[in-house]
Image (cartoon, rainbow, N blue to C red):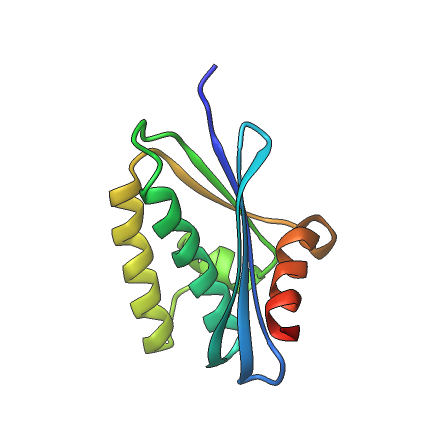
Amino acid sequence: MREEFTIFTDGGSRGNPGPAAIGVVVKKNGRVIKEIAKRIGEATNNVAEYVAVIEALRYVATINSQRQPLSFYLDSLLVVNQLMGTFKVKDAKLRNFLFEIRTLEQEVGGEVKYFLVPREQNQHADSLVNYALDK
């Protein structure tokens, strides 16, 4: 059986824009191997969502020598649909993030999929966002 990375990401800001943070949970074969809870300064919710995906891809790029598939789970309808190419990215800043994500996807190798999940299924990553914002 081929191993796979399962990655839950979330980003949020208090105010939009406002103080922002990201939360990332990386699992390999169902086991948590990395958690990231990090403030990213002043940003919008959408920027934070993108930064969370970028941070996750940067981390996985350092450990995915076997080019294993990646499955991302996010609770942002906009960001998932933009990453899947269903929605156009009109904002220039988000377009730059999308370009960086596409570049990182190539570095990571393997198939990368993005899935929309209800907030309740993304609680671990969400709790990391709030932890970072509360510090």
